[in-house]
Amino acid sequence: MVAWIGRRAALRGGAATLGLTLLPRTWASGAEGGSIPPGRGRFFFGGWAGPALTVESFLPEWVRPDAPVVIVMHGVSRNAKGYCNAWADAVADGAVVVAPRFSVDAFPRGEDYQ
Image (cartoon, rainbow, N blue to C red; front, side, top):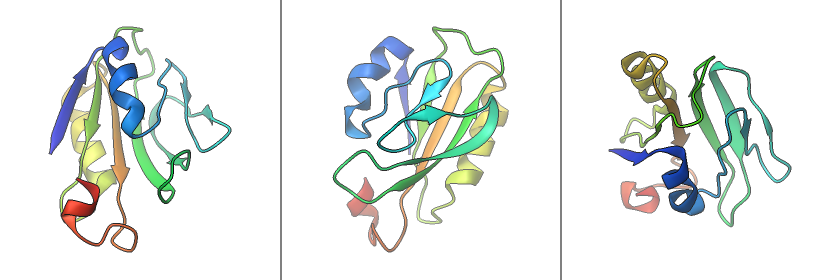
């Protein structure tokens, strides 16, 4: 399942479910926040009532302030990195891609994370 959230301004309102505030180079990495380098990477999100999540990411080196953000939901394989990489290849440098991983331990059924 893939959700196109739209432009960054539209994401701010929709990001409340994950508690992420996306800025061009600053991303949530837990309670304190932090930065990730451009390119393919990973950060950890723990700023919510649920368990900490690993989030795979793709941040284009020259991201535009109005670049779209794609939030990719993995399937039963729980392969967030593979999904993120596939979308990063598809959008090239035109969008920011994030793919949270919902572990089987914390979210045993698909309905638990969808």
